[in-house]
Length: 115
Length: 113
Image (cartoon, rainbow over all chains, first blue to last red; front, side, top):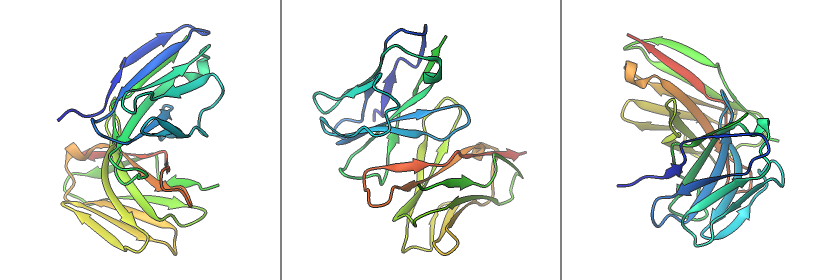
């Protein structure tokens, strides 16, 4: 069956540009997570949705980061006025239950490079 | 705050031997601990979860132990194969939260043929 998909897989942005990263979770999964993974590091939590409700956004680095999941399925992570330190892989994960972190199914990630 | 330490950045093991990876945490004991595998250019893949009241869990050639006294989990791959080469991430739940986990940096495992 289809897993979690993310698009684009690679994104190059000039400093100051806005970007939007998309996540398509596994159909029917209630929980959706966004992570940021820098090179050589583990994923770092950014935000969590239960259906369309954003229950935790404590990991978002600044108010330039914004995430939404308006219909409880597809989610978009938006970064405004990108900076070089935003360069990382952005991972999306979904989980069938809520609240639950028993098993998270990860997408392949979007590699963002800010020049 | 909770810190997770994975024993080394990289580990080289001869094919056929047992690979042992370590995950230590510094603060509260988590309700559970997870291990994930990550290949280059891919997202992590869940392998095993062990709860605080479990000492050991097995799945095929994988074994995980959890020692809350030592604040440590060990992840073993027996009869290792070159296809086991990957980065292995330890993750644990955030205290009093059941919807958030934190990850270690990972250990890059190389199985040498």
